[in-house]
Amino acid sequence: TFTSPAVAHIGMTEAAARAEFGDDNVQVIFRRLLSVDRAICTGQNEHGFFQLVLKKDDTIIGATIMAPPAGELISEISLAMHKKMKLSDLIFVMHAYPTFSLPLQVMGSTLYYNKLKKSSKLLSILKKIGL
Image (tube, rainbow, N blue to C red; front, side, top):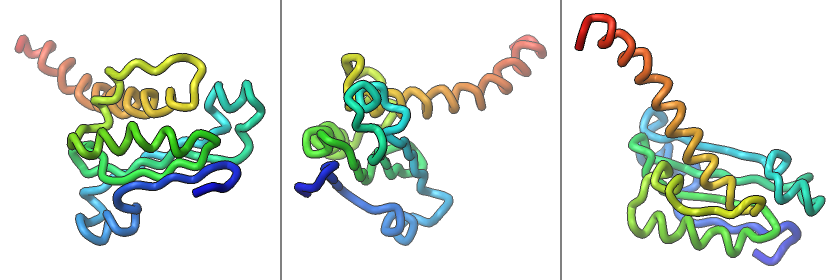
């Protein structure tokens, strides 16, 4: 949409995904532009966000972006959805610093890190018992 800041959307909304798959099978990751370095550098960080809608297995099924380059950023999400990629797959895509696209990589990294933290407890227990 040609607004300021721009808005772009693809796929399912959070409400539609929860209606179709159930609350336990959907997760939403949200990041405000307030914490995006490029937006801070250009003074465009007051309004805007990234919202990704994922299945329980982290497959991207929807996204809404409100940011100056939203129309350009949504294309990366579109490709990821077409290829049925998981958000964690985007951590391997090179994003320059500072750019508006970097939050996509950061969101994927955060999700991956949180999964590692959950499994690290199990790994430490297994090490203690010699497995």
